[in-house]
Length: 481
Ligand code: ATP
Ligand code: MG
Ligand code: MG
Ligand code: MG
Image (cartoon, rainbow, N blue to C red; front, side, top):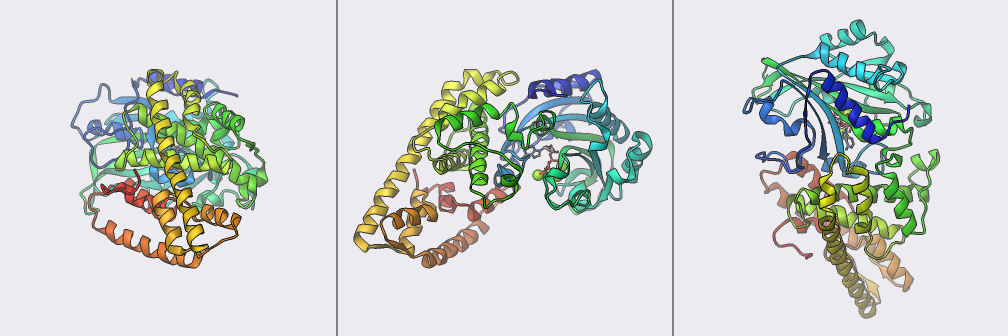
């Protein structure tokens, strides 16, 4: 069956409305009164006050489709088939109402019943927490899952716990995309041993919020147990539209096509260039996907009132825009172009997020402004590089680092330009100084308290990515303005 993203979302919400769930509109990506989160990163993140009893929910059964941002997945974007910076999480929730048995049978009915998603049952695989006998038995006895389609895994993958408060085992549902996606033909072992792969795509995670962690890993049964689930809309769309990755679905395809129209490269997918990072076309495809992903995430964040800056959310938006621009350069696009893609994002998403239309001008002008700023910095860097070459007839490691840190010049780019002018770059010295700078940054970070987990991961990403030089921009005394 072929379904559009809009149809899938609607079917999900209709199903849970039919099961007496109250529909909640999506809320801002900016968390409200929650210093522990930089971004709303899941459907349940918006419902915390209901779960911890601070507020009474409009119904004990809730459903939503919530935009979410996960900075810890940025490096996965365009590399795996299934990760985005911003994605939409479909959810159903029970606040002290139904529990494991019903949550499992709702999921199964929606996924497999002819009236709903009608996914062939043999395509679905299940994981459960090994100590959760209850869930295992529901799957086997009530649902009729075959033994070779269910795996009992450890805490690492199948227990949801943030260190304090409600927590519990989860069960995850995977879709098998077939052997084609399993180059070495490893099979279900990929799941059983939690090996990163694009054959078994995790579509739905159901958390049985059953215990309370007192903060010292002492667990007691919660008097009122909750269900919290999340399923990736883009992933389900890629299953129904039978696409190699989420990026060929109706949500991203118009953007990909428009990028093609403004550069000389083509987005060309084949199984070989999907797996092999050494193939030039793989890099090209990744660049397309990163641009399409980042422009969408950025558009949504700006619509929610986040603007490029040197701190927190603003810094992440700035980085996403700059990263997308660099990917554009890899495709041979030299001027600002991101803001021209915004209309595709709006068209693909406006049915469920009509406010995007009202914000179109704001989004486009904010992105364009940031693009121009960055391009200016880059061209200043080009001037600086030319002066260095003129004066020294080489590029010292120190200068290469300066270009990197102050002008966002990746070392590869410096080398390319220098080589064009028959000049050498002291790469060894550069690498040595870069290591030193990273070490310093790491030490400085140890002093920074109150980073949330997302932030911590993101800072780590900075260190290892091409944008290390922008580390500084997170602090008040930013080098790049
Ligand atoms: P994965 O293991 O694939 O990274 P996850 O276990 O981290 O997923 P959950 O935290 O369980 O994801 O989130 C619930 C659901 O949201 C997932 O089952 C998946 O369908 C979807 N999802 C999670 N992260 C992303 C992402 N970065 N982009 C798109 N969809 C996502
Ligand atoms: Mg993940
Ligand atoms: Mg997972
Ligand atoms: Mg999961």
